[in-house]
Image (tube, rainbow, N blue to C red; front, side, top):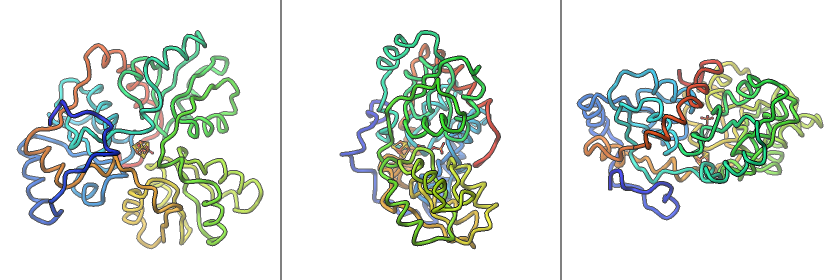
Length: 340
Ligand code: 13P
Ligand code: SF4
């Protein structure tokens, strides 16, 4: 299995199973992690038991920064493949493992390096900003990467008269265009199937049923524009609508005075939110919004990874060298938060 496992096969694949996340499992995971000199990183969308066993749980920007700064010789990335690849780009001399390399990402699949090269040829001189949810090959064609927590700041760092090509997420791109007020941003029409499925009518219905709730909306969601429309129409008070990365949601959960919050993102996020603010009632706008790729990282997969040293993530050194500047610019821009 190991490094030859192909990426993004999770739609038909069956996740590794048969292991209960009990005390014996937790002890064994910690023992093996120590033996391997490994740091365990988990994204906010991971299964609760994976989030709880990790050394750090956070959003994609926080985890990239932690991976870059860690002095452990092995990084075990409990997340999806592009996240582990990003860690490898930043730390080429470290061993980077992902517990199941089939954990891909439909958003990262929505643009190829070849498509990006063709798009660049149509806009010579434009600055390319790519979401971190992209392959290493796409990052190698990119000027600056961003995550949802610093996309606005990244675009604001580019001189106002320069054209920007933003890929691959159309909803995050629309959010950045709205906040920066720039009209020289071209946005690729990609999407994450999980977030795109959280739609406006569903949000409007849930918000009407809970008029006192704050709305925490991830900018990848199909409903982000609808949320701002509801605020614009006065259907929901504007100060209750917060467009936030997963890390931003956690910061806001600790600060909010609302007793109830509707959350529009992948459902794994609810675990960290409920831990951060147990007195607040957090409910998903769409409780079917579960990412099957994130959920490939099961207790059995993590154990196998630590026991066997699989699946190791490799990035071609030339590609990594070309992608590194864009990723380093990303981790240098924006405030710490969301797990750091
Ligand atoms: P953030 O953790 O950056 O908000 O990313 C969300 C996401 O979709 C990762 O796949
Ligand atoms: Fe990709 Fe969407 Fe899953 Fe995030 S939630 S890993 S963007 S498919």
